[in-house]
Image (cartoon, rainbow, N blue to C red; front, side, top):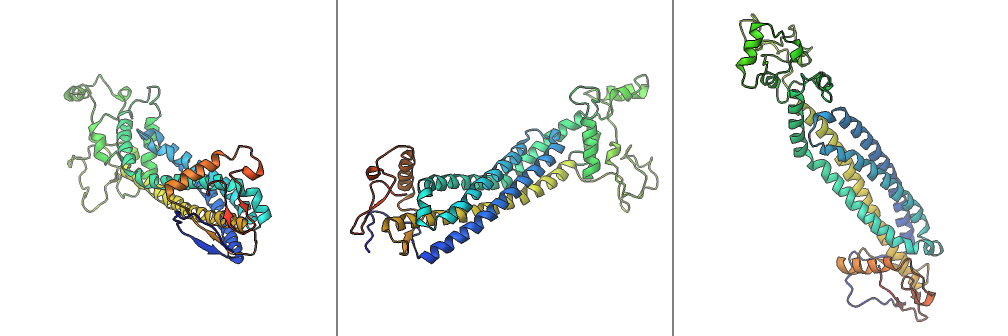
Amino acid sequence: MVVWCPAESVMVGRLTFTKAEREKLAEVLWLLNWISVVSGLVLVVLGLFLRVEVQRWVELMEEQAILYVPPMLISTGLAACVINFLGVRLSLDCTDLNRFLRWKLLLLPYVCSTFCFTSCILVGALTCFSIHSTLEDSLFVGLRDAMRSYKDTDTPGRCLMKKNLDLLQLHMHCCGNTDHRDWTRIQWVSTRYLDLSSRAVRERLRSNVAGQYLMDGAPFSCCSPLSPWPCIQNQLTNRLVHLGFDRVGQQQNLWSRGCRLALMEHYTGLLRSTGLTVLLVWVFELLVLTGVRYLQTAMENLLLLGDPESESDGWILENSLAQTARSNLGIIKNLGKCYQVEVDPNINTVEPQGFRTTSGPQA
């Protein structure tokens, strides 16, 4: 049997499939689609978990760019479940010519939407790996502003900042933005707890240009319970006050790690594991997309041949990428139109001589 093909077409990834190979391809696609459905559910769970983790310390970030990652994961996971669940049914039906006719007009939009969805998954995976610098800058500015508001327990909108910072330092085992010395550069004690009638307090307030009450110490939430010493949180640099304290041999009472580094390590670990998971889902979706494209073109060519037992060619692109895109766009535009059977550009016909002809562009 002679199959006619355009002389100028340059097919990409052309393969010839027998009936057994088409059935095997459908079985593999069925399995990959189910794996992708489960992977989509994993993405939804990861998105919900990351959302909870981000909301815990969201007030300590400035730009909050990481907030866009959880909704992206959740929406991507749900879309993966829907698209691949449809692919499970599609892969089972597209090995029989009679059942394939029910899907024929929907296959091309399905392939195009899967291609766009697969591209979005890749963008999401790259976002998880590239947000590192933005997150670090956001945490630096957010923690700096939060520490400045630590004393404002009576100010609406900032009254919970002290509680949030204390919980952060206790939970993450960190102190300050970079280290505990950051607390010595700001006033972190509320004015309501200062005895303004004391001469020492008034002199300390006047001695600073900004009129702040600076201390050589840090909040109690910076204290490490692992140290054998009682918590030394005041007059940290005064050696005469803490006699006998071996600063070299003994661990200092305050956590030496800054909270910015602690949060960066926490979120970076989450984003890397999430990015690897999304990248794995992208690989599965790419395999599914390639398999569906081969199955689509192989079954369309089999329909033109008219013999369910014969071999048929399948490919990824029939022409160049631009030509294929224009051709497929024209086919999609005509899907909603009504034609008579003999002039419908979306339906292939078989001539008695066995030559393949088409009244419209091929996908």
